[in-house]
Amino acid sequence: MAVLPFVSLLFITGFTFSAAGNCEVCVDFLSRLYGSLTLAHRELTPPLVEEELIQACTVAQGKEARLCYYLGATIDAATRVTASVSRPLASHVPVEKICQRLSSTDMQICELRYDPQVKDLSSDGLKIMKVLELRNILASWGEECRGCLEKHEFVSLIQEKALLHAHSTEL
Image (cartoon, rainbow, N blue to C red; front, side, top):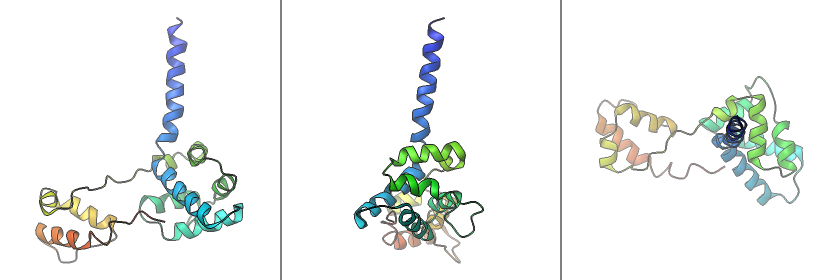
């Protein structure tokens, strides 16, 4: 009987630690935002952080744009919980803790995951991919192959656009 409380304690502890670890989009986006804020400004205030959050969200794409929508930092968002981000960031609360608090109110925030990154953009690596995967790569870059019918057309366009989108992770 003494094993049951120990196992339940391990389960609860593991669940608590994994909740912060699962918020990869939230943690990454807010970490980059916090880093740019601390470099540009000496003192952080909630209105300043909120303004910078909204500016960062105007250029966000993909999963980060979806996170901005959930936070209410976009024009079309139904609710606005940007104060739940700006106040703690201005107080230098770790972003993992902020994301964990946000996930307790809206689980969708921590369910966001980045799409797996394609590491091999060589001709041979792209040729073994399916056309749907090639289209998804282009879509993640905001590109479209109009009039492409053959796989080699997608491959050549990806190789052409790869250099433009190699460093698209900066705020």
